[in-house]
Image: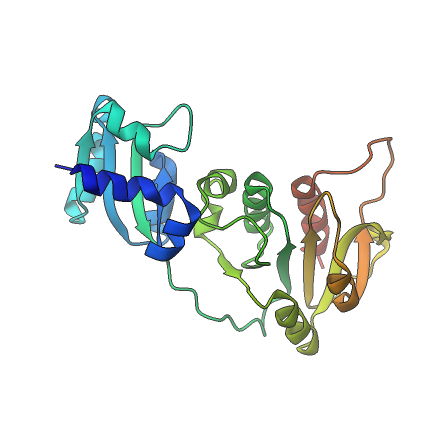
Length: 253
């Protein structure tokens, strides 16, 4: 039985500070829970809404064989753990995966995000990166946190497949990789035509905050700015949509 104190503890993981302090996070929904388990994340407990027990029976049996504790709770308790208006009836509590410094020597394309605070955009960029074969993503400190429930949902599980580094020393990491032979490309409305750009063997694509654009500190590091040429009258592209177009092109290099 899940005690009130334990329920309160798990519901606190909806808060970023508690997630970081406890190094745990919530995953809502059958598909995302399977993605996290298959990607090697450690599950502490699965919490199932009583009304959803029957439809999740097969998963509950699988978890039981793996000796993962499952608790069935009533609706009023389950809602305290939910970040969505229409919960899917099953939530997992997972531990952060230890992220070691990666050796990018053999990587051809890396994505980096500067100050992108909208979790939907961050999650979608992670999903796009996964689709186009990008294995490593660098996040500046002001980006939405990788284990934010909205980031996880928007990534459709891709957050569990990639190496995502939340870099406190973001700009120095970029400088270090520049010294290691990477060309730093910054997506910007005032950049050169993406399709006329000569793709380098080793590239870091930096996508910046949609409203403010790239910072001066970032522009000082970048080798070049690129843009998707505009044909119609739209003022700009959403940064997540733009990431798909640019990554599609750069991944072919």
